[in-house]
Image (tube, rainbow, N blue to C red):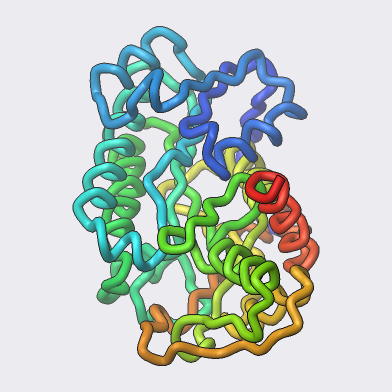
Length: 318
């Protein structure tokens, strides 16, 4: 096992979680309770719009957080990214810039910025290693979001190089779980499947359809696993660049669909719309560095999907 980075203790710290009402932010807040922080600082988007530089600087100036988690982002699936490229690029660029700069101005001790596995080149060798960043063209369907996330990583590195700021980054794979977005057009593949399969069962349909061939391979991480990994990274990692954060295993979209069908209890057929795009052929992240530090995921996919489906039923069907 590699030598661990010096411990950064969150106990007694003022910790700001940007985007605390989102799926990842809310999971981080839940996870932080056991770290005994002095205060968990939050602000809704109606209270502080992180796209507003003045409002963001005032938040940091007033609260003086010592540690910052930055999961706040405008997110969506292939359709949303392809339909609203300007929104995905601008909103995510400006939020990252405002939060990182405000954290520096306010003297934050540490900041953790969250990226996404879509930052990697479309055809990068698998599993994806951290060094693959910027070695080839991005997947066109989500390049706008990816470019903003790459800029956030590099901004953290720039503040580390110029100012000695302990700003770090982590790259989660596809996330799912409580608080997810289940919109039929603007959600990611797993929550979209949960809703689609549930609706098919509720409507008495004989089949449920997926986009493309079903052969693309994807890696999924439950959001509570993600939050635990992020707290671990905040405490044990300090370096430029980023750490991959994932489960280290993947499955095809077709396999995923069958697992969702089993969890939901839908016994119909699975069909494929071959006119729709597949997206990136495979996205599996190499998580050796994080495992060497001493962390790995613990929530198995099927039980995680059961948890996510229970959340869907509680939020949308009661």
